[in-house]
Length: 302
Image 1 (tube, rainbow, N blue to C red):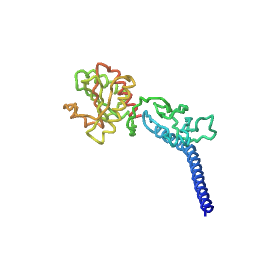
Image 2: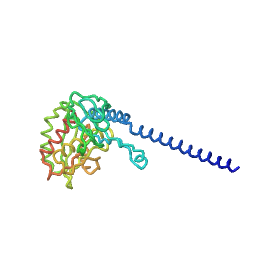
Image 3: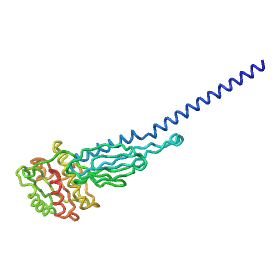
Image 4: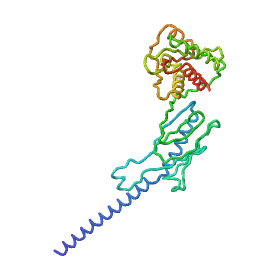
């Protein structure tokens, strides 16, 4: 009886050991499989090459300057990922003339990149470049498209509403609401006649004096039909001014009813759209403001 009990105990112990071995083997197989799947970057290379190309299509189609901040995908590391030795996701991105190429780690370590073409506009120049940074900026500045890393974009993205039109049919009016801006109004009126020589009352640019150190450009928030056009023009003027005065406080925002005096309130609805500029006359000259408005008009209708 003792021998049988001892033999039974040995068999039981062997069975437990065998179970532990099987469990351990399953864990090892699962770990290897999970690690293999996690470290297989083919999916992410395909994803990023296509995503970046589609983003570039969007940028090229947009009217005016544009920028997109792009954050590359990565695995958030913790105890499990470290224990399984799952590698971080690192890619080298190449922007070519008409496509993105994505390499795992770097071009030196990966012979099989994933690529995706984008629709290059004939009027756009692509600045070819490459980066291994996990945070990049895609941008279009005038007719140049590119990709940068460690780059803080100063581009203000304005509404992408299609506003192309024939300037020869347009007429632009300038109205001054304060004595300080009368000189501005006369000067800008003369300058705008060189771009809009038509008879259609298109836009009203109203000027008043800023009571603070900043310059504020208000757009129409009263008429939903005109708001997008007005907002886009206000944004373009803001962007033009900031190119001249990058450190100055220049903002655009919805009209807050702060200039509801008769000349403006009675005439603004006679135009397709309008903007009101509360200008800091001690910092911005007549030439600076007129150039900014003129350039914004050309970009708006171009």
